[in-house]
Amino acid sequence: MSILENTKETVPYIPGKAKTEVEKMMDAKNEKKISNDIKVHTISADNELIIEENKRVKGLEISLGKDINDDNNFKNVFVDHYNKLFLNKIKKLSGRKPNEYLTVADIDNKTSKDYIAEKQKEAMEIYTNIQKEIKEKNINLEDEKELKRIQDKLNFNLSHPKTVKALDNTSKFFGGLFDKFMNKANSGMKLVGSLASSVAGFAKKSLNAINASMKENKVIDTERKADVPGDEKKMGLWSILKKNFGLKQEQMEAKTKELEERMRIAENIYVKKIVDAKLSALNKKLQFVLTTDKIGRLSTEDKNKLFDLEDAIDNELTMTNNADLKGDLLSEKEATKLNMKFYEVFNRINK
Amino acid sequence: MNKENSALPELEKIDNELDSQLIDINEEYDEEVAKIIDNYNIDMEKIVEETKKESKKEAIESIKQEI
View (spheres, rainbow over the protein chains, first blue to last red):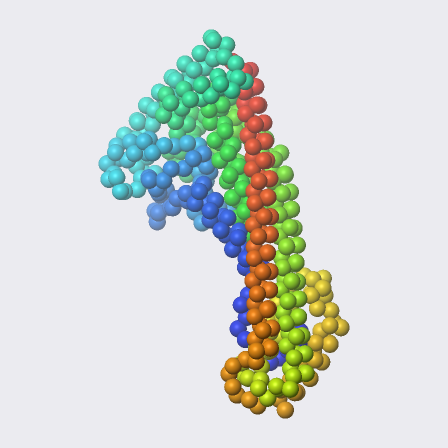
């Protein structure tokens, strides 16, 4: 019987803590991020977008559907900033009760469309006025105070005019509003007002995507998330964002690789410490059994614990895929020595 | 062979020591993982901040040209 290849019945093995704990940590981080940053909306049976009215999403890309890499399931909506009032208004116009969900159908009906068009018109007027003001008063946009004042004015007047941006081919509401507004506002004031939240939103989503993909060991397709329907050239601000993120993405990926490497090292150290501690305990026990004059008092439980400990070490070694680490954990010589000792003990306790 | 169920104190002591060691190792590992992830998040946030600043700067330039 070898300590590495023993054939005796083993006790149920609880998967090694190293991997489980990493996963748990990542899960906890991801869950925290998701709960803090992203409200994942659902898609109903008839493929309608369900918006959870009581949840507010700030400047974030929302992935709809379980698997964002699956085209059949994929709905990708960028929400720059839509506020509760705006959605509530549409809900009222659609005749929905306060506790009911809004759907794309509600948003897409004529009344809602008129309301959106009205808001859009209002937004464009204010945008034009602000642009005019900047031009006439020669406002220095590099001056943080001025910039903030303009941003506040824009946000206040429009009650978050950015409302909703959409990059989803299937979502008429989001797509329509976003296209119209963005095309007009191309490289205009709206950029300044929405830029920070857009970048932050995209970045947070990227972080989440990276974290999620790490868990599944998938390559992240952030480029796809950056895709925008329509003519990209019209979307000056988006291009700036995309360009900068294209550059930063390399850094992000490098950091992720670094993280994976650090995790791997930490895990190896952890497994080694665990196995060392168990080996040491096993050796102590074997030594005790070999030298004690109380062998007759050894209970069934004591014997089982000896086998269990050996099993635990064996399992720990088996679950370690790293060949180098396996050698580090228990050399062939050590394993042979341990086996011999174990046989001796086995014989002694079974006399 | 003795059938009594109580463990010998010497063996029990080894078990207890091992348990205590395992708890320490687990805690140490948990702390290490948390530290690694925190550092990763801090680094990523920095990258995000840099991107934000650069994008904003370019956006302002773009607006100035437009105006």
